[in-house]
Length: 280
Ligand SMILES: Cc1ncc(C[n+]2csc(CCOP(=O)(O)OP(=O)(O)O)c2C)c(N)n1
Ligand SMILES: [Mg+2]
Image: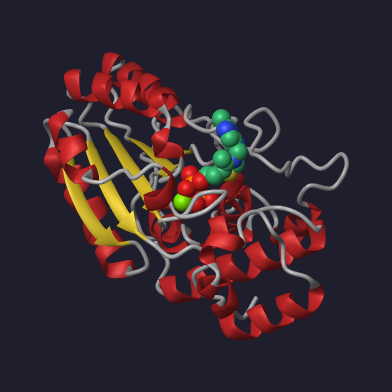
């Protein structure tokens, strides 16, 4: 079997801008969905899929040697669909079918309908457990494929996340990388006011994980973090990515804690697209 490629774009800034464009247009066309959630994860998925991190082939989506990306915070589906289009799994013209009756681009990702979706998520808290299963299975198979899971910070209040983290640490699952999209906000307000996670680094270290904290909007820092993760070798790694909910759209950034799950109307979307400035 030929080696899988790690696709790489020359212009990740342009990739990120296109992802933001599609996040806004798809959720506005749907009249529902989670644009601010999706905007906070853009640089991370841009680097994963187009920055030479994940090995994959859109013409062979279940190749056993592929690296896996599991979006545990499944309400970020508009971002996942946008990057799957960027990666060649979907046609970008389909993105505005999001959440329409009969569309396979459901509000939360459905692995039975969309190629490239590794897990059906949306009920928060489950993705890391699924990733642990993949990582353990790949190790048993002697595969060098890697598993990447993204969780939200509000999601990380759930007990199942910590059960999976404890298991991964105890079993030294070095082929597993967790990304925490630490945008500081959950559905009803700031994480620090509802159920603080701090000191998050210490908690993962206590569970035998290697830990790195970065600016999740710096393409360089994201890229370096994934290089670091691959080099760790003896334990699972967590990249704690400090992000901004709604990043790239000024009026979402200003009201991070009150814009969860709200699409932009047509006028707002026009302003947002101007700020994003993508050429699509
Ligand atoms: C088990 C479960 N409980 C509640 C919800 C409803 N819900 C959807 S998004 C969300 C907040 C998630 O916050 P966070 O993980 O920080 O994600 P963000 O949108 O900030 O990226 C909640 C509570 C859900 N989807 N699943
Ligand atoms: Mg959050």
